[in-house]
Length: 433
Image (cartoon, rainbow, N blue to C red; front, side, top):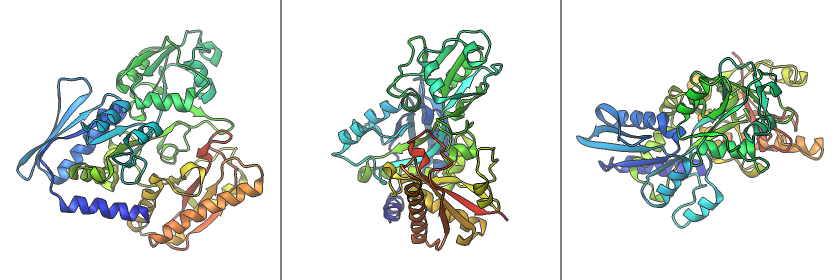
């Protein structure tokens, strides 16, 4: 499988090459760089180094140095967190070893970088954590949930008073990330789309934490940040289309069912990745690195079993199907709406295998349930949902997890609006003990 070949290549680099004492530079997302990247670098250096790891400010805003001694030599890692687009520019110019991004690489960036590496390949694209774009208001605001369309109209300035939403008679104050931010790119893509433009009155921020703190002090405020920066603000539930409103939590974000879920990335230049960068990425993707992800306030990709709370929208047939099961906090998703697993899914296969081994479970304990995005008829949706579940079953069999039970549930129980790619998924359930 591609994952196995990539893992072997990465392992070969890690084992064959000692850590260089030269600086490693990570440029890009403030969401990643503010706390997560320094935490991952620190954890990695603790596994390789001698003595304490220190994190210091450089004197420039949103930049930190992580330092340690490895093999008797000083190692210094710079984390510059000025926005996702700045990270791509630094990688393209050869100033960054790793590009930290809170959005996927753009097609234009793939093309621009294509002479060096394919940034969409498994060798270059690494999902290091899952985040939920948090919609924040003042703790005293009585509003508890919004639809994505309503949220877009708020930030476009079409809805200007909280009384229009069942809240107090107060003008709405908008707080938004700056233009260089991957968080802004994600909000613009998932919420504003091509139909809305951010109101000129919005206050713009480079820092997630500062934005959240200011919203928490403003009874009229509403803003958006990464999930790790909720702090003292109040978190709203968000809905898309006819799907139920969801708050971001361990299950809804890890499974990417929450409509404003997003992936956090590290991008590396394929075969030209430096040995130390390869080692750091391998650590970040592994179980120990993912534990650090959880410590940082983001959502780890290490699967855990959760018993979901069903509401009245869940069909009785589905409740019977899953009655004796818990759900793992992982969904398998597909590239471009097909049955081909995407890069994250290829790595999640190994995570499921490791979970079974760690928990003393076997393949017979698993149940895969496939879902289709909206189709022209029920039969076609059922066929697609079963084919997706079968695709995951075969991929698990290639890792030695054979004969897993599977079924399809058609295009019922959507987690997004009509036509949303998030509706096409395979959920993983495990028999309750």
